[in-house]
Image (cartoon, rainbow, N blue to C red; front, side, top):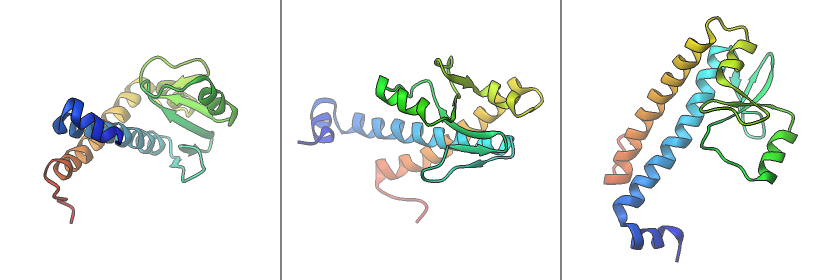
Length: 144
């Protein structure tokens, strides 16, 4: 039995569908954060095997407060030499905040700009998640 089959038995199909939507939103929000902050500092989003965001000031890996790692994962994250930008919550040891990321790139009013980037990312991710929810619930892809 797969995790999904077991979850359907325990929680029901609707709960599993909602879980999928939340996970989908989290992924979309993370990618949208990368795009918004990269655009704001004139950088770019990295490709496979690259840092999340690459700018003239260096390579940065983005994470959210919800992205928890075990000790081995955290050590590997720190060992790659990239600066870790924690977009939400209080940065863990070794990470900087989104405001510090913008300040490092000499963006004026970094507190305000960080909020604007976060709002832009949330809106973008929300729109994508709404479109995805139609597919999950009805099986109909409006983009086809």
